[in-house]
Length: 509
Ligand SMILES: [Zn+2]
Image 1 (cartoon, rainbow, N blue to C red):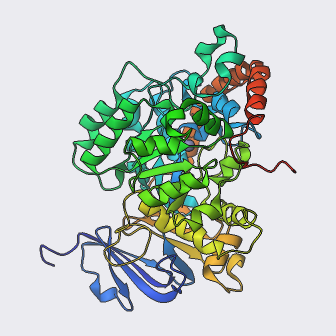
Image 2: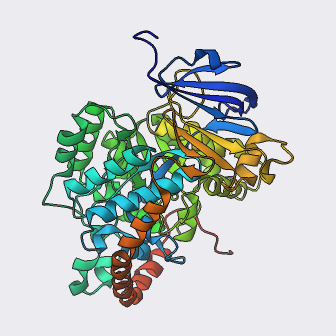
């Protein structure tokens, strides 16, 4: 062994390796060698290259080996609320589930909720998660807890703190008119202005200026353009360019957001996309979550500027937002990723559900038969997610020089018997049941279904310990929101009575 020898190596032997989402790629029986977190060789008989002091061999027999998948839009802040709600319009749901409605949480609750969300992602074959987390009121110690959680459980995370400087109530059509004035102070959205702490300054000083971490990276998360002043957008662009960071924001999730743009930005033709273009924010580092109510001319502008989209069909349906213009986005050649979004409205952190729903919704988005949607879905979950994170050159594929993020799927599972078409079976048949082992940065994080980095039973006990406190607050928030339902419904119906130049929901007419 010499100075240049790797310190740690993982060899996966005799797996059926699917290197990428390229339609021409077919699984081949190969070994994959990962040195110090980076794939160093793909071939046969690689055992003789095991030279490090710390080596591990994972048997890939009867396993399909695929690139680790990427959850490109997710929020760890409400994982404790999974399964609590039925369908609700987006604007109702925000008042039920999002942090500004709740008292300050404990550090332990922040940590535990981040861990359980990450665990669910890992068990579904996601090796990277983009967490657009809201910490409200902001506490530096809470951000440290999020970082700690991701580092301890071993998933790759790109954290984008969610921030805004315009109050939510003034960005939703009709709310200020419909709600009595005395209720205005209690109405909030995804992120609210936080005057006490300058989150971006803290982030820069504490993390962006610090040495890079192995698996935790950073993005910027302006909550939504309508909740950010032009000054905050400029600050975001400058910081992103200085540290070469991706930017994630919400755009046109609901009809109310499209209507608000029509009313609020006459100088930009009623378009948030044109506003962002004028402000210099469109481009490859920007990712627009949801994009349900995009107009075709806006899609063209995104294509011209290389701006990306992240689709979240699961939450778009449950929150009655509608179906994004999938086929138009594909035709325009936009790069896009897939997200599982909030646990309180999606509710599963399951990329297989997200891929299948995407492919099926694409099918009903155009009467004419189109290209293979399973290919689009799998590419979005892998290469599309990597592109969103500015990581085309080391995530989303299995190749020499790429990070060692791979998933071993059990080919003895009935989902693969018979084994006819790898990508179609991953997208249309697989539920997540066959996810066997998960490797992140060359470390085995899940082995034969079992979490390796921490005691799963202990994690469950920690969730059980914080849950009563969370549920007591959840019930209080729910009871308070229920009293607001007549006002919420009135504003909702007024929004639906307006014309924004398109329709994105099935109404039976
Ligand atoms: Zn979101």
